[in-house]
Each structure stands twice: as C-alpha cells, then as structure tokens.
Length: 217
Image 1 (cartoon, one colour):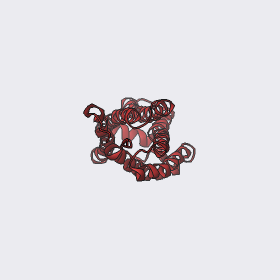
Image 2 (cartoon, one colour):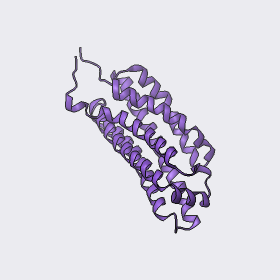
Image 3 (cartoon, helix red, strand yellow):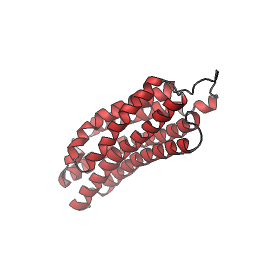
Image 4 (cartoon, helix red, strand yellow):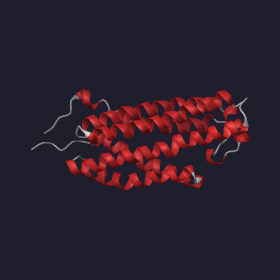
C-alpha cells in the first residue's frame, strides 16, 4: 500500500487551517466591530464610518484572513504535488489555487488600505475600493477556488483518487462557485456566498484529511 512520507503530509493541516482561520476572522470581525457593514450595498458614508470606527476589528480579521490565504496557498501546492499526477494537470491545480489565495490576499490588503485612508479619501475612492475588495474576496476568490475543486475532482475521478464521494461532491460544488462571478454585476447574488463557502469548506476538509492516491496493486 502506498505510504505518504511524513514530510509530504505537512500540507494537510493547511487545508483545515484555511477554514479555521477564515471562520475566526468572521467571528473576530463580528465581536470587535462597533458598527455593522454589508459591503455590497454600502455607501461611501457607511464605509467611512466602519473603517474608521472599527479599525481594530478590520485589522484583527485581516490578520486572520492573511493566515488563511497563506494556508490556502500551502494546501494547494501540497495537493498538486501529492495527489495530482505531474504535468499539465498539476500545473493547472497550482495556478488555480494560487489565484484563489492571491485574490483572497488582495482583499485583505485592500481592507487594511481602507482603514489607512478612510478619514481622508473621497467618497468615490472609498466606493471603488469597497467594490474591488468585495470582488477580490468574493467572486474572484470563489471562482478560482471552484476551478481548483473542479480540476482536482475531475483528475481524481480519472486517476483513482480517494475519497470518491468528495470528488463527486466537488464536481457538483465547483460550478456553483463559478456563479459567484455574477455578483460583480448583480450584487444581490453575494447573499449566496456563505453557502458556496460552506460547501467548499466541506470539500477542502475532506481532501485535507482523507485525500489519497489509489494504492498500487
């Protein structure tokens, strides 16, 4: 039976770490924020009030989400190296995971930028940065993550990757995550993002804890 070297397993906790750090960031933001903010519909005045009055919440959440982005990049690199055959498939998996982590990291950086300039920036600047922050952390991040899930699940079904239920689940979840791109134009679609994140978290945890290559005969 195929045994995975101890050094090769170091990426696995990163998949769970991404989920834990992301959820911790949401909790920290909810607990520390002095006002609430629904980013898709936020006006410039609401953005200014939130990023000036709840700076501690934003910085704390951004720190945790930066950890989540690093975990996602680490997890993706290990997933491609360990479970996906070398060649074009592995390269595409690394690209998709890197793009998802980069988009998420960009949303973190933009959140910190909004804290830094919220007092002095004009209304137009705040509005644009708010929309770009939303797109990076939502539509772009989720769509890239959906591509990652699709590539791994499709390749895994063809090469005997396990667990099979997670791969079938991934083939259903991945197209749903791609729907998030619509939210860039139709902002009410962002209300579905918590569901997409939950479904993708289930897949990530399954692959981090149980994903294996088929043992050779």
